[in-house]
Image 1 (cartoon, one colour):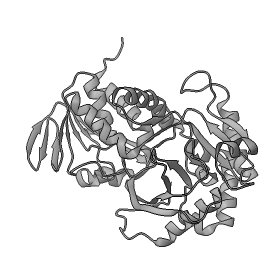
Image 2: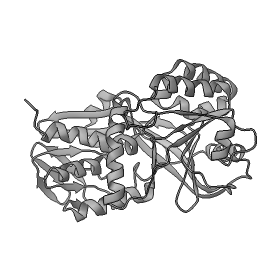
Image 3: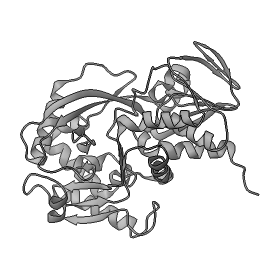
Image 4: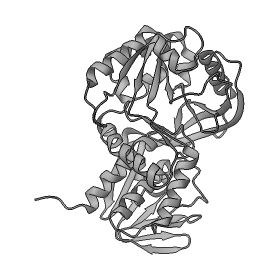
Length: 376
């Protein structure tokens, strides 16, 4: 099998293939991982997914746990803490808790949503005084280190015999053969997992499915928090972004209020959220803007808004910026691209920015459909 693209979705397919005894070559035009799989929060936000994404999230979680043990990937079984600063935000959390009940697709023993009162939220997080009216713990979520997970998985797969050909551009894909800038590779199966660059190899598919590029403004800061974050943190803005929340009636009312009271933040298409890296620095983000291409010139106003929001939430002075970057991922009408335009050629992508959360399960789903026998 040849995998075109070495992001988390491509690596997930390489893992699922090597687990099934296939020989695998991974080809990438870049010199190393530098795309969406490293430019993210490392937040494996399984619980907020809905529909097919929830199924793939449930498949991804045990694979991540296996890789933490087998490949030495840094992983926290931390859950996620959602901060509600207004009653309508708490109403969204209550609706999801009621909808999900006490059972979970992620495992036994815990529900998907544990509601928290204000004191319980503030006991978990170093917030500014009187910030929370309540919140929730999403106990099944995990946190990876995005700067280590991909490279660690590459090293693990290479140790199991996967061949990596970096700095090698794929020019043509046909059934049974992948043509590259360094020659052709024969293949029984081809997986094309190039994220937003699908329009470079299959422009007709990108046009058909409305796949564009989504740019993000993100920061790594020294926030001077009075205590570490024990888990990723979501806010009311996050409740408008993830399907499990956003499809609830209470989320409609929340969105109306936030857009009315904070039009400048709504214009940024904000998801105010945080994860803390092992070195103590804080990943802060993010904003969203879409197009066939995205401008490399980032508006400083977005960063200023993110820094101000962070200072207000945690009751700290303006955080010291350590790094800024532009995230980039595929954005489409649906959560996923799963297509077979020619026999043995499979196009696969997460097209709503949830590749880290669902990509390993997506890959397992696709490889099972290719390789695993259908029971009679």
